[in-house]
Length: 190
Ligand SMILES: [Zn+2]
Image (cartoon, rainbow, N blue to C red; front, side, top):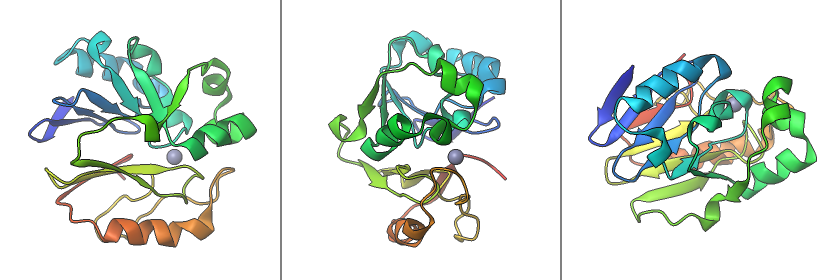
């Protein structure tokens, strides 16, 4: 259930993937509604979810945010653009009414998060207005959300959704191509 990618980085594979950086105590994305028990039991096998301090959302589609209630003591972060998108178009940003109706979470701008110098946030609009990726230069891992799904750059995120920004996608992919990574940790395994 909990797969180790490299030292200190774990993956829970569900409808969408959740990642845990154990040394930094960071969760990346919270998974799909149907994966609540999977995520709860998987995370609980190595850490009390109450001890998680930081959750980063790559974007705010329902299948990446649904299980935020597992992390009762965390602060939650998304990009400023994604937070603004939520304010402007709640359903178009989350895409599922039952999640949108219950998502009463205080979101913080990712730029206010103090990360170790080997972890970088990369703004990658395209799949959504405010999608972000996270790059770990120490372990050469790229967390790509729904922007990129394979290392050949053939499978990329959908751009036909209400808060997509297709014209920005090529530039976002160029940013990712410049990164030196050995492991791609994407939002879904297709
Ligand atoms: Zn998505």
